[in-house]
Structures are given as structure tokens and as C-alpha cells.
Length: 96
Image 1 (cartoon, helix red, strand yellow):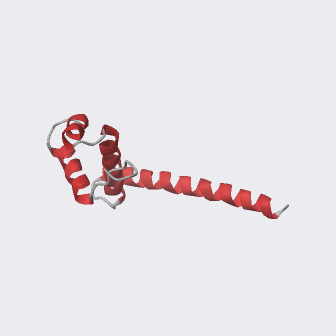
Image 2 (cartoon, rainbow, N blue to C red):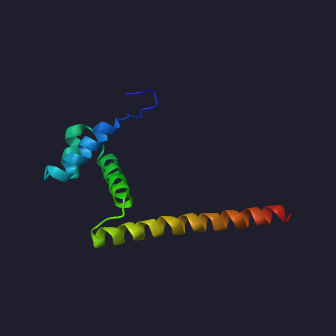
Image 3 (tube, rainbow, N blue to C red):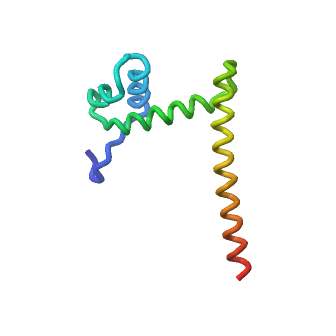
């Protein structure tokens, strides 16, 4: 373990852990225990992998493409809302 208490894992290790979850038929908890990592850590890796795979479209499968577009819209709305708040903040600051 490093001095900060945080372990780092290679991308290859993460990909292999995700592959195990997807193909082994075992639970996330079982695989995490076998690999000596936290259940939430493996869950976060899976969620990130799904998001990356989803946003890598366009997809031929209509359902996947719809899910990708919905996720993209969610991200764009969050970015827009953040920019609106920043613009309002800076407008208030410059009017003083």
C-alpha cells in the first residue's frame, strides 16, 4: 500500500475485473472479495465502463442508441445548468 492508503490499479486489472463480472456468472461481491477490492470500487468501475460503452455510439441497436442519446442529453443538461449558474454568478460579481 502507498503512504496515502490508496491502492492504484492498472487499466488492465480493471478491464479483467469487469470481464469477470460480465462473463463468470458470479456476483460483484464474490469477484470483489476474490480480487481483494471493495465492492463499491468494482461497482464504480462497472458503472464507468457502461457509461463509456454507451457513449461510444452511434449504435445499430435502436434501444442502445436511444439510451446513448438520453445519457448524452443528461450530460448536456448538467453542463448547461452549470454554465447558467456560473454566468449568473459572474454577472452578479461584475455588477458590484
